[in-house]
Length: 56
Image (cartoon, rainbow, N blue to C red; front, side):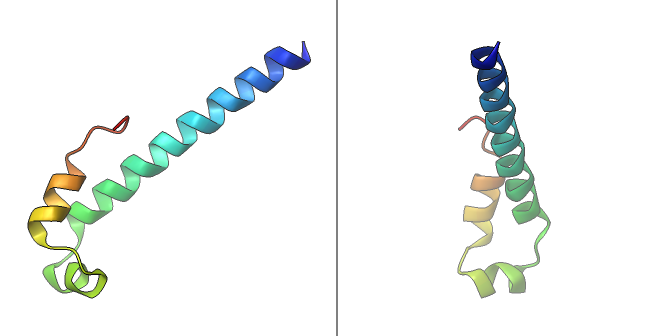
């Protein structure tokens, strides 16, 4: 039973990480050019990163 709980927890953590990554990528698509410039990312790079699938 403990092993199953650990496996489910690990899977839930992995899914959470993937969803966090996706949300972060979507935020890049919503940033203004000035905001992107502040963090050193071009509009093209933000677009490319924002459109990547969550598992990548």
